[in-house]
Length: 211
Image (cartoon, rainbow, N blue to C red; front, side, top):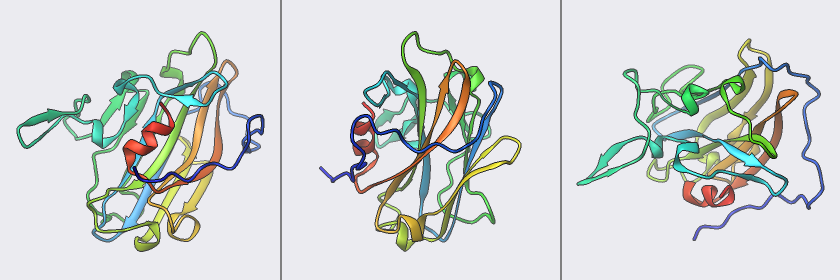
């Protein structure tokens, strides 16, 4: 199994939070852009965090191009049905993903996520947490983010207020995946929590971190 790079925080240490008060109607957008023929992907997970870390409980909680219905040889895989425009979503559209981009040919956005916390049903215990992950597709030719030209992730409010901007090649150049942060949704509204954890396993290894 490929190794994971652990978050070097100990139990009880709070993750750093941005000094931003968000109301219950706040929505979020994540943008990923890069240049070249490499294939990068955005992923989001709907998790419950009851104090022991964010955990996803079913395939219906995984917003990933790997979870889109498709045929691989003679086998049907995936659980999400794409819309006519190629986008796909989970939890009634509260989390939505752009069509999958196979290369970086757009000027400022190749893939995007949209998150509307108001559309999520809140758990009876704990809080909803949505980890946001960017990864290199293993067959894309790039070994790590340092091999990809101008790979950038931006997390912002739906109104365009920037919350995080990450140059993946310079800040996470030795990794093939990174959790930029999480959107945490509680009774008082939603907030973005910056994390910045690098991974050197495939997406299934990342899933193992949240299951």
